[in-house]
Length: 104
Image (cartoon, rainbow, N blue to C red):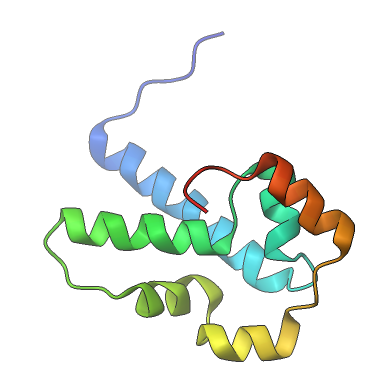
């Protein structure tokens, strides 16, 4: 069965809604560490922040990496780190080293 065809505006609205839901899900799941996301999926909150910033820049909008991270994390990154980030285990670090994309 083929996926339905949507006009550009509808497709963009659906993609934006799905993205907002993903971001909210990641904000709610503070127990999930970025290294876990990287090891399992090859992307993390910081990747989303970089992609968000790149999309803004493509449209001529000024947005710093820290501002983009605050949008994704729902708070300043330093605050998120202090509240939720845990020390990575040796196993997590080894998995990351073995599988990390070249741009990390």
